[in-house]
Amino acid sequence: MRCPYCLNMDSKVLDSRQTEEGASIRRRRECTACGKRFTTYERLEEIPLMVVKKDGRREPFARSKILNGILRACEKRPISLQTIEEMVDKVEKQVRANLEPEVSSGTIGELVMDYLRELDDVAYVRFASVYRQFKDVDRFIEEVQQLRKAEKYVGEN
Picture (cartoon, rainbow, N blue to C red):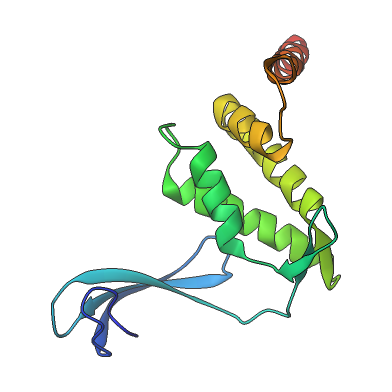
């Protein structure tokens, strides 16, 4: 494995652990040249999955895009990176469980919003405002009001 700091090709594994879902192995490594430590993830190569965008374009499924979107939504929120990684794992697992060669970007976005709604209201509204492309403040307020109604309904039961 190439060191991300000095690009040396030799490193030693310090620790290996399965992720909670068992879908990948996390390895903590140390470069034999510069001594810096870094983490790698070993995953089973999956069947190619295409994402159908809103405009009809198709592109390969990229786990990193989901991770980046969630990270932006959760910025400065009390949510650990591990929790975010687990959420991305769940979304990817659900998408791949359909065994379809294509999935719409809308399906992925809705899954992410479902998980964020349960996890953190602020992160949910941030993600929804970008995903649903709120055009004005009224649409933003409407989404927050729907979130509050849902919370009151859950609290009454």
